[in-house]
Amino acid sequence: MHVVSHKAIWMFCVQHPDARSALDHWYRVAKRGTWTKFADVRQSFNAADFVAPFVGFDIGGNKYRLIAEISFGRKVLLIRAIMTHKEYERGAWKS
Image: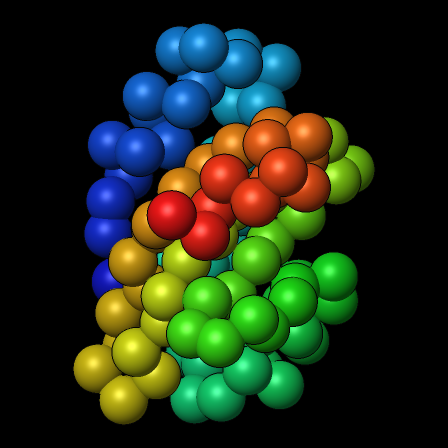
């Protein structure tokens, strides 16, 4: 997968340094992903959720959430937001 944008991860880690290790792991797995459908994503990240058109990933033991759009045909994953779980529960990812 081509992950757009790694900069979002870096910027989030500036504010939340404890997320760096978990996000680095997520990035390495996602970048190597050869996903063709959501079921493939779930094989790599069993806690991933599909809320059309987004895929939500638990990061750092569900302390953080990464929201992405995935174009399986083009092999592109676009990071839409990274937030704390509290922000996610408030619906910050929907805007």
